[in-house]
Amino acid sequence: MTERTETPDRKGYWPAVIRLTLTLLAIWFLVSFGAGIIFRAFLDQFQIGGAPLGFWFAQNGAIYVFVALIFYYCAAMNRLEKKFGIEG
Image (spheres, rainbow, N blue to C red):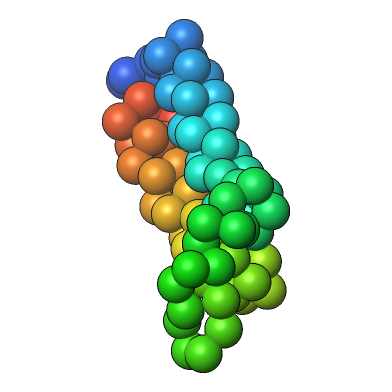
């Protein structure tokens, strides 16, 4: 059995995790609530696939962005765990 000689940097790890989580939640909020509701009137000037862009974000785009954020979160967490010596 191998023993780790490095101690994990927990004080640096948690602020990085919280920063990442809040950033991704802000992006998700802006895309789902902002593009679908707040900026809908402006975005409806443009069309994607024949549908107004604000409507498209409310129906499809927010879900696509949410799934992309999940994959990004997974990759970013693996990177942070390696950086700070945390075993997941």
